[in-house]
Image 1 (cartoon, rainbow, N blue to C red):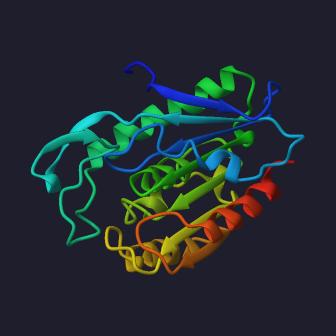
Image 2: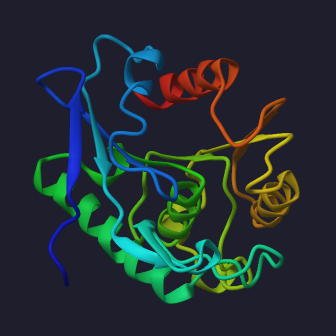
Length: 223
């Protein structure tokens, strides 16, 4: 196993009860979502550690092989089945699982750990969280989709069948079409996952009403 991913961390209090591992999108980095922490208005009496990892740098096929931070290669935008590089997905899944173990080693139980992600980070949240063998506190899935959706039923973890999932998407997203997110939502709904589904009149981004809804979702979990 390779060394742990580089991370940026923010704690809301010295005494931490929960951790949120937040995964950035393609070409971004660990600093991308730092500004969202105060906007989430988390409960003042609950200590939360945000862990923002850097994805590895890798060549991205659809960007003419240009190297950038990415959780996996994107091979083809025309087909959801062929979009993601399976080897990259599974390697990054192992690296994210190592971050969960690191939080366990810092006395945060798995059921107090939330996975969150935007775009490629959303895909990795679903890739990792639905297969993880111990129950997580929640999954936050923004502007992304479920990769390897044809294998999930065979690979899912019973431990996370009841884990709450927040899925949000922009109606006018030109990068990950709403249809891809809707298909992902339908696959998971048919597998009886508990999903809070939201879409907003926006592109491939995050908006204020979405942050408000996400804040409410988190407040139900952080107790």
